[in-house]
Length: 140
Image 1 (cartoon, rainbow, N blue to C red):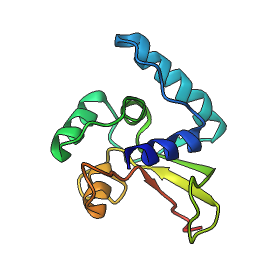
Image 2 (image 1 turned 180 degrees about the vertical axis):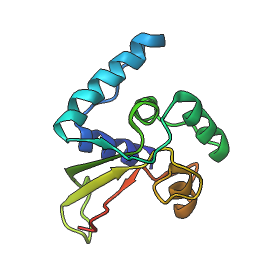
Image 3 (image 1 turned 45 degrees about the vertical axis):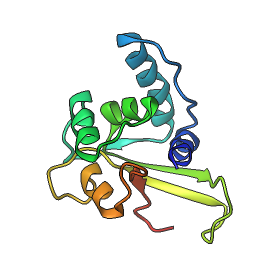
Image 4 (image 1 turned 90 degrees about the vertical axis):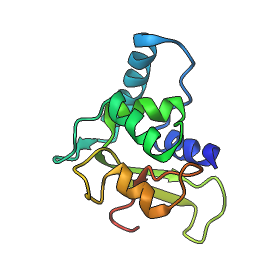
């Protein structure tokens, strides 16, 4: 299941897994790789989001007993809580057709908000095997 979640993020952003390097170089590489794609997708931060950080991601991982893939961890710490418009092909046939849409990547919001990654992960009851990363606000 982790591979499918990573594939969705990679397909939506067109970013491959970031090589394992250490420290600030890795964070800068992740930020620049994502930043270029996000600019093309006209990403805008959710106005009421809590500014993302590695500490918020660590708290999230601890709460749900999971370790996020490194590339998604960097994305969530830098860009979590954004609106966008991205279309991607499904990896397998679905009853919804061959193309999916993501309008919102979850991030950190005030407790109880429906765009908060904590709220969304509790809703699907899948952690630590599966976590919610975003949704299609337009239900297309």
